[in-house]
Amino acid sequence: MEPRNQGLLEKEPLQEVDEEMVSEVDLNNTITEEEKEEMHNELTKLEEEIATLRQVLSSKEKRHSELKQRLGITPLSELRHNLSRGWNDMQTSTAYKKTSETLSTAGQKTTAAFSNLGSAISRKFGDMSRRSVGPAVEAVLRRFSLQQLRPVLRTSPLTTYQKTVSARVNDPCLLQA
Image 1: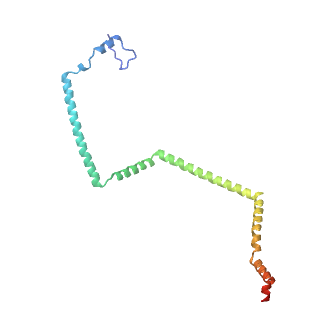
Image 2 (image 1 turned 90 degrees about the vertical axis):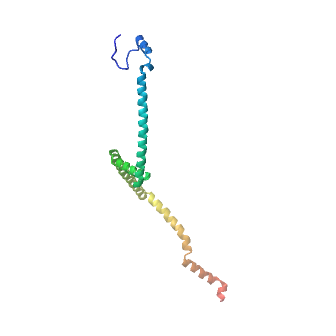
Image 3 (image 1 turned 135 degrees about the vertical axis):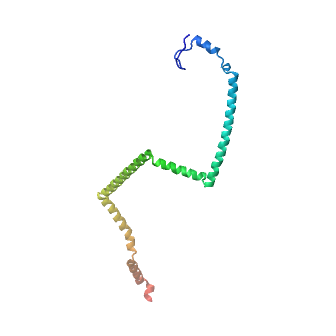
C-alpha cells in the first residue's frame, strides 16, 4: 500500500485496509510508562506554578487596592474618569462628528420649514380677514356691541337722575313738604 500525502480531510471514503489499521491501533498503549511519569511530573509542576502565580497575583491586587486607597481613588471617581474619557473619545470620533453635522442641518431645515408654514398660515388668515368674512364679522360685532350698550345707556347717570326728578315731582308726599 502507498502512503498518502493528502490532508486530514480526504475526498475519498476510507478503504477496507484503512479501517483495519484504525481498529488495530490502541491509543492507550501508545504512551509508555516513562512518558506517563514525565507527564504527571510536568502536570504537578504546572499546578504548583499556577498556585504560585495566584498567590503573586493576590498580593499584587492587595497592593494595588492599598495604593488606590492611599491616593484617594474611589470606584466612583474611576467610573467618572472612565465615563468622561469615553465621552471624549466618542465626541472626537468621525461617526459622532458626521451624525452631529447631519442632525444640525436637519434641525436648521426643520426650523425653516416651520417658519415658512407659520408665515403661510398667517398670510391665509390675513387674506381671509380682508375678504368677505371680514365685513360680516365686523357687522356681528357692531350689533353685539349696540345690543350690549342699550341697557347701559338706559341706566346711565343722566337717565337715572331724570327718572328720580320726575318721580319726586309726581310724588304727592314730597310736594306737601
